[in-house]
Length: 105
Length: 395
Image (cartoon, rainbow over all chains, first blue to last red; front, side, top):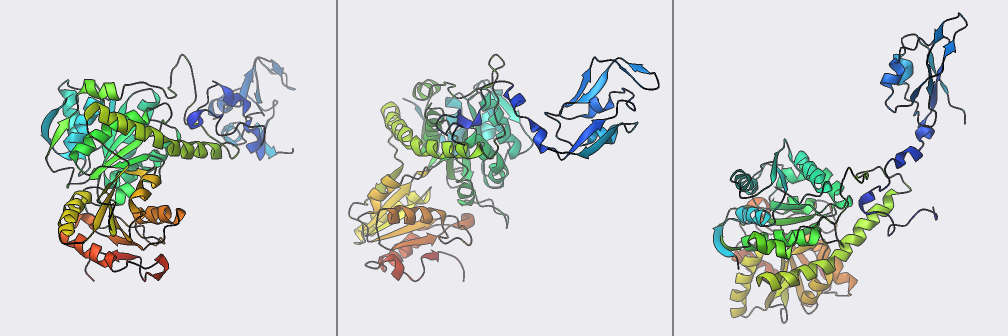
């Protein structure tokens, strides 16, 4: 911990002077189970995106065509840098397209 | 220079907050503090004080609200007692480690159970380790003066620590005394409003009240400890300048007749007045009694205290609170023993607990204490059979 600043050099009262610095704090290492979205089953209802408390569900402007020929304009993926693995998305998904799988690091 | 008014301790505190031109007051009524915030509400309603008066639903919210207002750069005030202070306890630590210069009045009172609204130091002492600078006034004038001094200290760029001013419930809070009231212009020239601490500002965003994981937390606790230690110098300057502005002299601890005293009686709060009057009487009867009044409890002014006990044969420490199950019983006693031991003083230091839950403290009690303490002269600490005595309790 020698590289971190000592108490004399830290801003008073644990104040953080740089806005938005929390983005550098990757909370992914809290995760035990990780959500995996099955793009074939996903109906793009946006419920996972709405419920995610982080928010770590990303709505990408990437079209996707299922094997059965159905085309969606967007794709939902998980931001694995910040997803804490709470499982709310998997719980709320109406078509069971999200599975929580054991994290392997 | 000021004007003399007949004021209760509570009103003296309210007039001090008004003179300090506070911007935000948040409080919840509790006996014996209620009159402070009633008076402040009146000042705001009458247009005598331009402040935001927040009606909150509990003391937890009262202190939380002033934490928020202070973080936004306001000069803030709150007051409480007893159970209300205990409900603020969680936020007291947040205020101090966030280094917000909040000022609070505490009309000291016993804590439940059993329910008791009378004078006692249990609330003040329970809150003494929350990282605040803690003063105890002996009368209404002191309560008034210390609240104004508190802003000067808390907002000093080298301090940024909240300050609490205790004054005895009912005995000081409800007794009317002549008080030399400091006017706003005088108060602001002594304690100018300058928001030198970190302040929330949308133009320059910062984060306050952040999370600190194990590799960060410890440093901020050390910051607070070092800052409260270093505040001693600012406190002593604030007292010196108070005297220059207002003519009244305060010290961290004052001794009366301690130069040649055999027994030094250590007191806090209104008992000090009784003790001084007792000492004058006892000296006429040939008992060499000295009185040491502790005005500043945190940071504990060891150097100033030691000057008054180093020549004593016995030190008799009066506590108006107990720490059940501790090795020391009385909280002030623990400070006195450590102060003496660190400097190699080995005379009997005895603890006398008195006046819990508003039980009257008479000069005759003090006479019993001093005579008992006198009987310990010439002994060493290890020779004392029992280091504490409960005075005025039924067996």
